Length: 138
Image 1: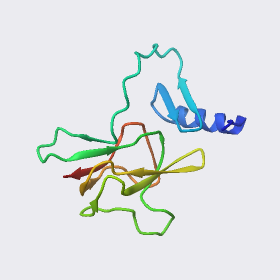
Image 2: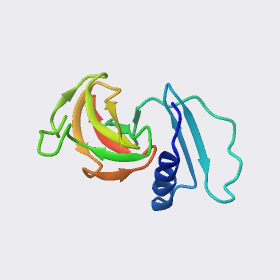
Image 3: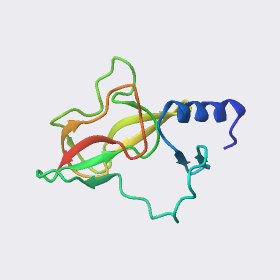
Protein backbone atom coordinates (compact mmCIF):
# COMPACT_ATOMS: atom_id res chain seq x y z
CA UNK A 1 0.00 0.00 0.00
CA UNK A 2 1.58 3.27 -1.11
CA UNK A 3 1.28 6.30 1.15
CA UNK A 4 0.24 9.59 -0.40
CA UNK A 5 1.64 12.97 0.64
CA UNK A 6 -1.66 13.54 2.45
CA UNK A 7 -1.23 10.28 4.40
CA UNK A 8 2.28 11.26 5.49
CA UNK A 9 1.05 14.73 6.50
CA UNK A 10 -1.72 13.15 8.61
CA UNK A 11 0.78 10.84 10.35
CA UNK A 12 3.06 13.78 11.12
CA UNK A 13 0.07 15.79 12.42
CA UNK A 14 -0.84 12.95 14.80
CA UNK A 15 2.76 12.75 16.04
CA UNK A 16 2.92 16.53 16.54
CA UNK A 17 -0.28 16.44 18.62
CA UNK A 18 1.02 13.66 20.85
CA UNK A 19 3.91 13.42 23.26
CA UNK A 20 5.42 10.51 21.38
CA UNK A 21 9.06 10.61 20.36
CA UNK A 22 8.65 7.59 18.11
CA UNK A 23 5.84 5.90 16.15
CA UNK A 24 5.77 2.49 14.56
CA UNK A 25 2.83 1.35 12.40
CA UNK A 26 2.78 -2.16 11.00
CA UNK A 27 0.08 -3.75 8.89
CA UNK A 28 0.24 -6.74 6.57
CA UNK A 29 0.65 -4.29 3.67
CA UNK A 30 3.28 -1.88 5.00
CA UNK A 31 5.57 -0.86 7.86
CA UNK A 32 6.29 2.70 8.97
CA UNK A 33 8.73 3.85 11.63
CA UNK A 34 9.05 7.57 12.41
CA UNK A 35 11.27 9.19 15.05
CA UNK A 36 10.90 12.77 16.24
CA UNK A 37 13.94 15.06 16.46
CA UNK A 38 17.03 13.46 17.92
CA UNK A 39 15.33 10.44 19.46
CA UNK A 40 17.98 7.88 20.34
CA UNK A 41 18.48 4.83 18.16
CA UNK A 42 16.12 2.14 19.48
CA UNK A 43 17.38 -1.08 20.99
CA UNK A 44 16.89 -4.25 18.93
CA UNK A 45 13.22 -5.09 18.64
CA UNK A 46 11.72 -7.46 21.15
CA UNK A 47 8.98 -9.83 20.02
CA UNK A 48 5.54 -8.18 20.10
CA UNK A 49 3.63 -8.50 23.34
CA UNK A 50 0.15 -10.01 23.39
CA UNK A 51 -2.79 -7.58 23.32
CA UNK A 52 -3.74 -8.44 26.90
CA UNK A 53 -1.06 -8.35 29.57
CA UNK A 54 -1.50 -8.92 33.31
CA UNK A 55 -1.55 -5.77 35.40
CA UNK A 56 -0.25 -5.20 38.89
CA UNK A 57 -3.82 -5.01 40.16
CA UNK A 58 -4.59 -7.41 43.00
CA UNK A 59 -7.74 -8.67 41.27
CA UNK A 60 -5.69 -10.39 38.55
CA UNK A 61 -7.24 -8.36 35.75
CA UNK A 62 -5.44 -8.10 32.41
CA UNK A 63 -5.39 -5.04 30.19
CA UNK A 64 -6.30 -4.79 26.53
CA UNK A 65 -3.75 -2.28 25.26
CA UNK A 66 -3.83 -0.14 22.13
CA UNK A 67 -1.74 -1.90 19.46
CA UNK A 68 -1.33 1.39 17.55
CA UNK A 69 -1.71 5.14 17.79
CA UNK A 70 -5.09 6.41 16.60
CA UNK A 71 -8.60 7.48 17.52
CA UNK A 72 -10.43 5.07 19.87
CA UNK A 73 -14.10 4.28 19.19
CA UNK A 74 -16.26 2.11 21.47
CA UNK A 75 -18.98 1.59 18.83
CA UNK A 76 -19.18 0.83 15.12
CA UNK A 77 -20.84 4.17 14.36
CA UNK A 78 -22.08 7.27 16.22
CA UNK A 79 -25.22 6.46 18.19
CA UNK A 80 -24.65 2.67 17.99
CA UNK A 81 -24.32 0.55 21.12
CA UNK A 82 -20.74 0.00 22.32
CA UNK A 83 -19.06 -3.26 21.28
CA UNK A 84 -18.60 -4.07 24.99
CA UNK A 85 -19.36 -2.42 28.31
CA UNK A 86 -18.46 -3.08 31.94
CA UNK A 87 -19.80 -6.52 32.89
CA UNK A 88 -19.69 -7.90 29.33
CA UNK A 89 -18.19 -11.37 28.88
CA UNK A 90 -15.52 -11.51 26.14
CA UNK A 91 -13.53 -14.25 24.44
CA UNK A 92 -10.09 -13.86 22.88
CA UNK A 93 -11.54 -13.06 19.44
CA UNK A 94 -14.30 -10.67 20.63
CA UNK A 95 -14.06 -7.24 18.96
CA UNK A 96 -13.98 -4.70 21.81
CA UNK A 97 -13.43 -1.43 19.90
CA UNK A 98 -12.12 0.26 16.77
CA UNK A 99 -9.02 2.38 16.34
CA UNK A 100 -8.98 4.73 13.37
CA UNK A 101 -5.64 5.41 11.74
CA UNK A 102 -5.49 7.52 8.58
CA UNK A 103 -9.21 7.03 7.93
CA UNK A 104 -8.83 3.23 8.17
CA UNK A 105 -10.83 1.49 10.90
CA UNK A 106 -8.98 -1.31 12.72
CA UNK A 107 -10.94 -3.84 14.78
CA UNK A 108 -9.30 -4.52 18.14
CA UNK A 109 -9.91 -7.92 19.73
CA UNK A 110 -9.84 -8.68 23.46
CA UNK A 111 -6.95 -11.14 23.23
CA UNK A 112 -8.08 -12.76 26.46
CA UNK A 113 -11.26 -14.36 27.84
CA UNK A 114 -13.01 -12.82 30.82
CA UNK A 115 -15.31 -10.03 31.97
CA UNK A 116 -14.78 -6.34 31.25
CA UNK A 117 -14.25 -4.60 34.60
CA UNK A 118 -13.17 -1.15 33.38
CA UNK A 119 -13.17 0.97 30.24
CA UNK A 120 -9.89 2.93 30.47
CA UNK A 121 -10.07 5.16 27.36
CA UNK A 122 -12.53 7.88 26.36
CA UNK A 123 -14.59 7.44 23.21
CA UNK A 124 -13.43 9.39 20.12
CA UNK A 125 -10.14 10.36 21.79
CA UNK A 126 -6.56 9.81 20.62
CA UNK A 127 -4.89 6.77 22.21
CA UNK A 128 -1.20 5.97 22.11
CA UNK A 129 0.51 2.66 21.42
CA UNK A 130 0.44 0.52 24.59
CA UNK A 131 -2.19 2.65 26.35
CA UNK A 132 -4.69 0.54 28.32
CA UNK A 133 -8.13 0.49 26.69
CA UNK A 134 -9.96 -2.06 28.88
CA UNK A 135 -9.34 -4.18 32.00
CA UNK A 136 -10.54 -7.77 31.78
CA UNK A 137 -10.85 -10.11 34.77
CA UNK A 138 -10.47 -13.82 33.84
